[in-house]
Length: 470
Image (cartoon, rainbow, N blue to C red):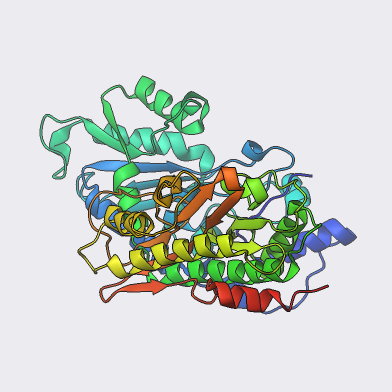
């Protein structure tokens, strides 16, 4: 049976329907109406999503914005429904096959701003399989905090009606005379772009309304998502705290003779136990030579005595993912060589932390501070080379709804941005890989280490591993 994660609460009518389906009569029961007035979607206030939509329309006053939500059949029989990040960011709505249309105030002559959510009409037969859903109309408007919720079967008619009303530039003060009508949407990219619903949508619009200029939403929406609000930080912190607990469980469980997948199971069990919906990305548990493979996630090797284990994992909680890496000695203690390399990676991370100056630092400068720390170390490989040559990836990336989150990497780090600092050294000839990764938020006064609860000091790691389960 296809799993669905729908963003709905049982209404009185919904409970009656469920009772009817179960016992064959419209039995109703008394219940608390607290859920009906719930002011949150995915643990963020409805007002938060409304504010984002308003901010986006303020930036894009000269056109209509459209986003297409995920469809349930995109996940197959074994996939669990997950809304698309951009759509979720602006709506908080997890209903499959939804659309969003935003029309700034004044774009259509003498009309105020319009925020319209399109969702499928209710289907009682499908609800027997997937649960009661919220439908268009007043019920959807109250549940999702939208001024208008319309059936998705009316989407294209409403869109082309709006585009048609803009065909004359003189009808709007927001559109310069002589310019084409603009439609802002997510533009498909990559080798599979032509197969996406976004690509099909663009093709339909170009054929039906060739005078419309279709413009990508990537940059304005990416820059909005890069800077997190307090509500987003609360959700992200929860994901990080869950991941911290999972890494701690792994540290207490690891020992020679286990398989990497058993460590993965402990980690992902902690995710589920603490309320995460899924891993934010495939869990990486690499031991021995696999610790040197950056995105290794087969997790099938047996852990040998003397191995280092790189555990790079992140829980996703309400669409926001953590990204934390720790490196553990399988036997509970680092060899001297492992400790020396580990300590150098930790020093590189701290050098990057110290290089941050609010409003004056970019990610490239943090990378340079970490790399220079490795380069200036007396540690060498067997040929006498400095170990910075084994630092083969970038130091940082934005973090949020995507593990490698959207947003321009040029320019200084803005206050409110969340990013990783993750130096690593990987020496395949020694089967020795070390990565230490933490999650940070930039503020006007400095960095806040959101993953600070998880220790990385080698002495503390060894002390905690001394109390492992037998």
